[in-house]
Image 1 (cartoon, rainbow, N blue to C red):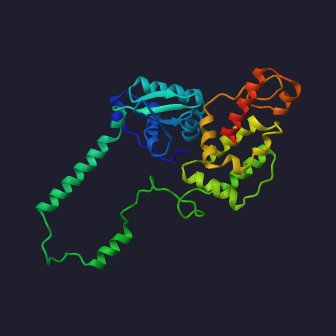
Image 2 (image 1 turned 180 degrees about the vertical axis):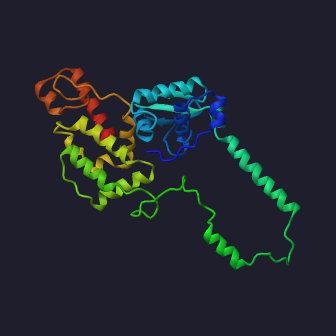
Image 3 (image 1 turned 90 degrees about the vertical axis):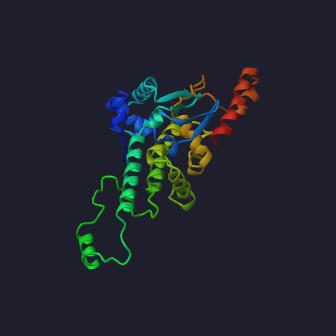
Length: 291
């Protein structure tokens, strides 16, 4: 979940954004700091799923379709451009959208310049002694610390010295619950989860991937074996699975298996048609991308 949002009220009023649109654009504006990107005709687009928006902005909406509708509204306002692949939505921040929060940056620069000018006008002469003893200054600082505003401070998990939340045990427990497994929180598994966490993945991301893959693979004797930390939380595979969250579930075929499912023995032993051979070759591509 996104803990802090910085809304540019002046730009929101200027661009006639309502509260929901302003909250969403505040989140979208930060995509370049963590989201994967794609170069399309020289423009950089960032990958984001509707479910990711719901997970990160629970105060905005709990419906993926509403999240996408708000994205379309931002495009109509001219602050983003939307594109897509077969699996996920792509967002590009327009030149207009890049002005978000620029006024605050200019104000901060102006304040810094004013302070520098004042220092030049009234320099402290060498050898001058402060009217207030250093001891009194220190006592005053202790009583009235400079940083009294805690609204934007990050509370770090005491179990993690670098500030990354340690939810490895929770992710493995959720996998055991959904897949009916009994994996332990061994270093080889927790190391993968910690690595994805440092890349920006949240517990909600892990749960979404687990839910998706359990829905696709449970009941398939060939694929259930891959419901394991080593496959699900691997760097390349995990990012691929996240990218699939915005795509529809594969349709089931006549055997009750999802497209791309099946066993090569079924068609080799029974003399199935070329179309089924093509489906099996698609299986191989699916396996290469998913396992």
